[in-house]
Image 1 (cartoon, rainbow, N blue to C red):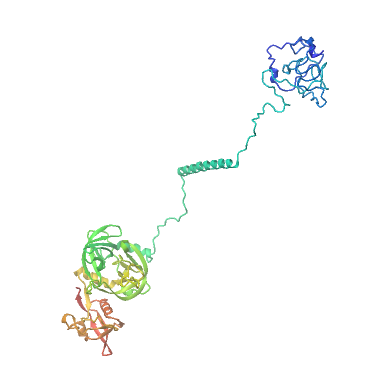
Image 2 (cartoon, helix red, strand yellow):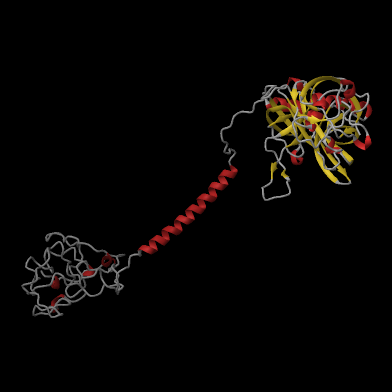
Length: 521
């Protein structure tokens, strides 16, 4: 019995006839032909079975409604398991096959035809699903799930990718840096470079550091103010009573003197006495406890090449320490002479050193390896100006030529200044011709202010010195001029004996002189 002759089949209760349309897949297999129908009708369509109606989309002459013939030799029917079952006669396949249909009834056979009908196209499907929308057709040219916008999607360009990567990198770097800074600030650890541990070890007493540590508490800086302005110099403590030794040119003309110790404490000071011929002066402070006097050495023990340390305030830089050696001993120098009459000239049988000494070092101590004072820094030799400069002035600053008053001479003068406020000078009682250009020091033929050139009953007269004699040696040491003779004499104390070698009428004579004393003007 064909599908068109079976009676209408009722839908089971509660089953939506459209529910099967939503299921896409192969149809359920038909039950065997001899299976009981369970009392249900054997039809899939509401159309009467006796009308001989052709299925929708087909003509009775075997042609499809779209003009294609089903017996087209080019058409090859799809395998049965790919074929979509035909619906009831003229109905929609959405209704599904009848479970009571015999195998092959109402469906294309192997030859692609239905029973009693012309050839059927196995790829013919209804144009619309029962729900109103297009039915999914896997053999169609374009599956329904593919959307064609009319143009292919465009891949991002290279510069767009590069810009996007750069932005991401910047953001990542900024965030990472910020987080790193926050972590570093919040971290309890910090970067520390390797360093040697602090040592509480002292220095050898004879080293520069050891000498400085010993002497610095006894070195002071002097600030002076007067009618001609102010200045800075250096001094050192002589005793526990507050006496301080310095240079005369540091305090000359001063009205106010302030002493500053190495601890930074500053106190006023008063002038005790000064002497321009030796360029030495003594000031005193009161009410200061814990004074540290410096030990005095012996300048007779100094040898060329001995290491020395100078302490002072060059250019007002207090507690400056420099080091060097003794370059020469017994170096005759003169300093001062600014007044023009010679009253401020100092004659020094100096110790020469290459320890850097500058303006402000004046009056400071020159120390040996035992931190003993062997000299009082007094003068420097400056570099000459250029040849084009006709002033004959010198540049200030150290060039390695510094001079210090021997401590033996400084000690004697300081003691006299503390006792009497004045210093005495050793003399031989003669007037020298300072214009003499030959070797040695010549005794003048005329005295000052009408006085005789050789003081009557003086040390020189008693030794047999005559006007016009040329003194060429002092204690066997040759002298080059009048200044050098004065320096050699002032290196001694009054009452010291001297042996002078004089040249008279072309013959050398040796005379013994006992030095006399004269008060400094």
